[in-house]
Length: 307
Image (cartoon, rainbow, N blue to C red; front, side, top):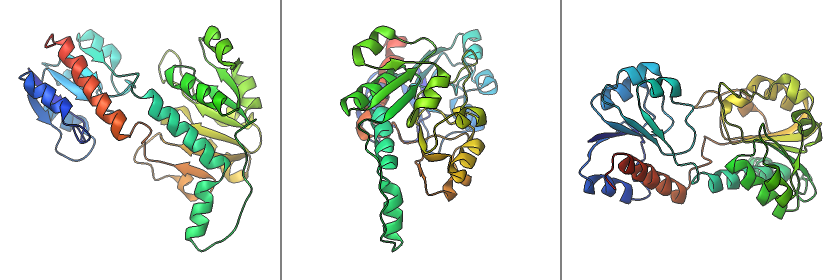
């Protein structure tokens, strides 16, 4: 078996995933280009590979049609919207992922961004570094109304952490788990209501053709003045132009974004003081990356019955 490892940082945090492949006698093609692979590079490196250990690089119809031996894509991570699922199913290509590993790092990143924006940490840091000794009062998280759109694994974990921190938590989901919500004191409500009530709004939605979602101009207009938006899910779920206008006008108090419609991001939001922007690092901890790679390799070997 021959495997393309598309991840540019594979085995950076642990040598064990690579050793597992080697011990199984798998031929490995590594991404040594130092960046996220594009369509042409995936095809060139993976043209005779049986499987791919994948990140967020694109596996669209063109790519899948030009990987004739491909039988399995083992995703190191949870999101699979970078893969043409319909085409993969037509070609009999198995799609595997590691959904549980990402829960804690993304939840912690979400909480970190909430604290940063409520207590104005990045703002004061930038002021101080520029020689400006000035103070603005922030807000407590305790007692704040925090809305969570999307109550999957990550949304639930964020809600549970927020409840421990004494926040007043509201949730919206297409298929809400009301038993879990009752157990943890999370108030299930409508989309319109969660927009109107939230002091802080966290997005943890999946992108799919069946359940499209975007926080656009109309939705943002319904939100409280001075409220905060946190997005650690997918960049496509926010209209970045509408977000910029709402932040610049003062309708929104702040935003924390780890994901963007187009990455790397160099857009207008970089001009604003009331934003915290990070380069898609929510899952980037040494512990979680090592575990994701380990599980992706184990899933792959199990699929091919090497274990």
